[in-house]
Amino acid sequence: MSTVQPIPAGMPTLTPHLVCRNAAAAIDFYVRAFGAVELARLPAPDGRLMHAMLRVGDSPLMLVDEFPEMGCHSPQGLGGSPITLHLYVTDVDAALARAVEAGARLAMPAADMFWGDRYGRVEDPFGHQWSIATHIRDLSPAEILAASVQGCPGAA
Image (cartoon, rainbow, N blue to C red; front, side, top):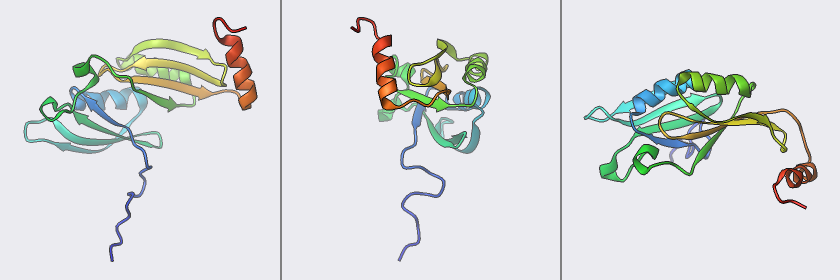
């Protein structure tokens, strides 16, 4: 009988796995921008990364270089990405400034949002979208709904 756990210790059931053009440079960026800690790196014979594992806060983040010949494309190879990674931090304004200083493009400055977060967005140099937030107010679902209707253009 096997004692191997089907979900490895320290791993959640869902982990982002980013495809990056130049994953080694992406690792360096995530360390500078988000305080990531590199846990593992597995290079392919041609020097591209077949796999890398980081930890951002308490969350794992997997990375791989793009391998278009295997159908593995980065946002830069596809002309963008519909995916946004959400990162909660203790100080959103400082986190956005740190990411921009590390090379991210500010897509939306931080603002207090109707759902109770101070929230902003950046695009990293590898085409990945990040929303970054600090929770500042606890609101009930009814309060969030009421605030969202008030803040929507064209709402009655």
